[in-house]
Image (cartoon, rainbow, N blue to C red; front, side, top):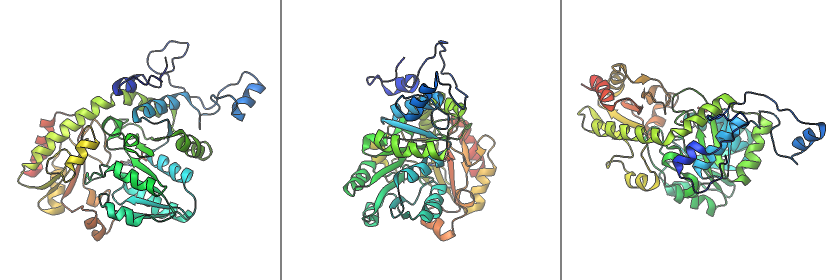
Length: 393
Ligand SMILES: *Cc1c(COP(=O)(O)O)cnc(C)c1O
């Protein structure tokens, strides 16, 4: 069984890529929970370590189950190479450590996952890598922020929790005109709905913890791109820095990819139905969902994505008290900050994920006290409506 069939469609690759059946003839992919691998002779060991013969050495950087997940995700993203990590943050840390050096500069969208802001601002800065944060959809601000030493443009689209959409092709052109790379955090769409590399991005980065797992079990991450970028310097950070994904988690993600397109379609359908219903509720001031005609970048989302995803945000009248009432009246939807799960989750960003920002920073980020984010799961959407109607009545 090989995985290099370029004719395969997305769904076939999701099920069949990265399969290397062993002599046991197993149908479902095997898990290899082993820290090291055995060599036939001293010379064989020397050849493996010296890199003259490819193959497994040690599971910090070579494990067959992890590699199967990497091959399958690379096939889905349309990238030459994928390297998996212990978490999404591990993948982003390795990208920075692998590609940047002291004196380099990053331009990042402001509305990235909060921990990424802290990584760039507090930790990369310690090693002389500065970051300028810009509003995701303000292209003039991106251009103004670029300096001669800018090496990386970084963004997340759709953004969290406002679901703003950035034009990936446009920002890839801008990056390349300045000899910089564009990295896209593709966590919210997954390759089932958006393929950043085909739009010109150099790297597509994942928290596999979210939709790739899809059932809220394991933490993991990955970077996909060219062999030159990912296979050398980013892989080098994994090998020497040791942010390794466990074979068991890799296996869960590998199996998750098999149902990814079906799940993303179902998440998107449920989310659109819920967003349209929310728009009609008198206590709801505004709904944020790229699939709504009222969304400012609806046309761009339609051309850049093949679906609108599972994240819906909305603002209720009455501030924090009203928002908390909606959240506390739910019986089906889980009150948790995770997302991308079969189970719907509900979050009050102003007092949780964005609670460490000052009120001014929150206002600038567009997150009011009445703002609620839902990761729409795979339950019957009628039950989700009933669950929210209770607190909105
Ligand atoms: C969760 C998340 C991350 C971080 O991933 P972890 O697996 O939690 O380390 C990065 N980006 C986005 C958009 C996320 O939602």
